[in-house]
Length: 212
Image 1: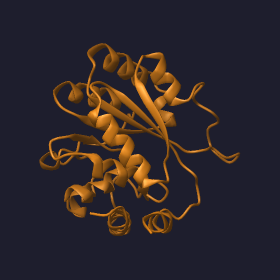
Image 2: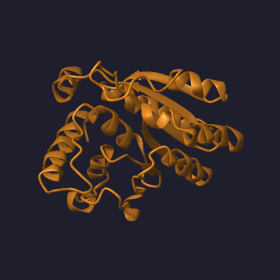
Image 3: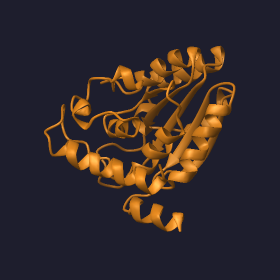
Image 4: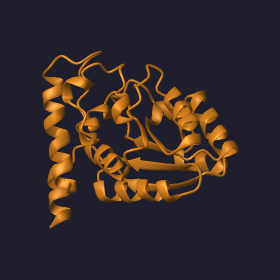
């Protein structure tokens, strides 16, 4: 599947999902398609994927039916998709545990990265050399954001403090995200990807241009 086809599939499934009264509420993927598609396409069938509520629509790239994704609190075990947790940072701990017996990739945001459970996960991943990839989407906060800055250091710098390898990528570039996750998968221990998002860019149009 090409990157363009993956973005189109995710966007189409997202429209279907959010028109079907998903639980607990609609969460459009717009703006994060490249992070989701790039990540999922880099995974192998036996890898665990731990999405958030927004990212779960990417399950269609693992052949998960859209109807199976309507309940945002449910996982999809046959497709190796863990349930999105109501305490997002706990996903990082779950992923760290799953990474002790295979490869696991988890999606997080800046709010999750400011939570104590995330720091516990980094520490545990480094101690046990869990084969886990933390994908942290960094979305710039405007003046109208309900919360101000929540993290004193960039996620990649936090990873470095625990001796965890990391990379910073353009989160609107599906090929860059894909390459970064492949790199994390080939690493022998934990890895963190800081995916910086640029609001307002048409991800599908950009992906088409990059493919030319």
